Image 1 (cartoon, rainbow, N blue to C red):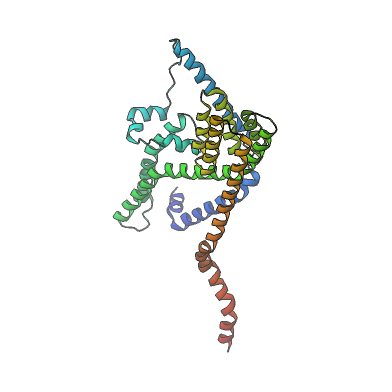
Image 2: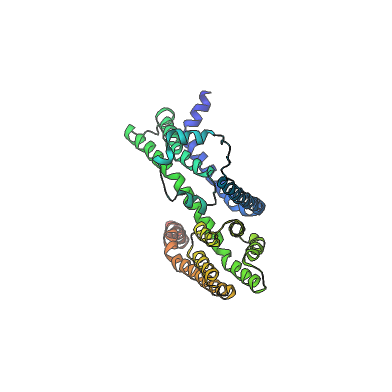
Length: 323
């Protein structure tokens, strides 16, 4: 046991463990796209659950109008009990939290409770773990004030970690949606000009675009369900724009709302929106290409120039030493 404890607190062993974890994470990141399973069925199942939820809410609204008691008492889990007992929803109140969760792909009341729970638990766990390790396991030869500041820094990181996770998940989801959105508009234009209704067009495109973007297929299927069960069709288009939070989708939703209100042809509006979204995607690609030289400056200075100097000056230095 003493040898194991000495091995754990050995700085060389810790650095080797960190390096091994970094190599493992790199290998997993590179091989995940080829080894990952298709999640389209899972996404479509979540959309079906959302459709059933909309149907249930519609039925409950009708029953409430007749004064019947609808919903049974919900079971409370550990996280929900902690959130409600400490009143974390009021303490960490964020009016935009549900929109952020929806944009990241999390729906319902469960993710809200989970977010508030980890908003409280993450800083406490990181602060306690870092303090226990730095003060009782291995102090790395640092003074007390430095170890205390390091533990507090990890605690603050835990407080902001849930928001950072949501932001990154929403950005990845938005990128996947906008990559396939112009193609989806072209398919939708073909369906509408072929005589299909907008609901049938959304449903058809969602099944066809799933191989390119699972997230976009999920959003289109959910919009189809909302068009079927919501009283106002405008709300379904506005929900689509709010869930994606992208100017291109918002413009398409506005065009569809205006076409529903004023009776303008959907084909013409979709054709214009498809062209604008393609131009927007091309402009974003050109913007990234223009920013590439500036981003490559630091890696070139740190990694390429030293190697270049060694290759160029190495033979000259060896010849000089031999003389």
